[in-house]
Image (tube, rainbow, N blue to C red; front, side, top):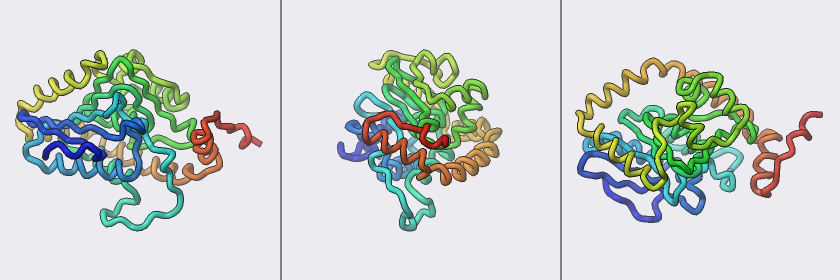
Length: 267
């Protein structure tokens, strides 16, 4: 596995220590996810999992941002053609691979981390954030529900009360707040973030991959049933919420760069 073309959605670089740096590469869109990006993410993780030279993956974003989540400007409604992999969309393929990825995954999160960008970080094994972090779980203000099992993983990480506060309020989360509530292991200057994450990854990569995989499996075992249950409810509730009048209003407001009017639906 080697560095890909500069226009690829995911850049990969494997070093001599067995650390694979994966960079989400849509900087002009703040690394927002469209179908192609989700598919590329899923295939990149799948390849890393199969590669015996990869011990640890470090995930980051190009252009000073982690990811702004779903690309609402690329939103496509209606039925999609069947996929060979059996998933309904690239998002579901990536979601499944993120949650089942067997090797240590470190998220180096700087700048914007919103929606799917934030929940991807939450699903990672270790999260380091830069001082300029601006994270958000914007599901309430989009008329949607949590994704990537974050309805469980966030509670498991920071506790029910704090998770509810962040989910219901859709408030912005800075680096200090992320560290305070336990969403991040460390806060570093933005310019030092990636180097620190790579240094920790190289420390971890010294150990047998089989042992790292076994440790992750045992650490995650207690959460597997809850994650499966969370996904089932999230998928069901998301199917109801997507395309609802409130969700359509939220997307239209985003595209039109205005504040959504949800009070119109309270009659």
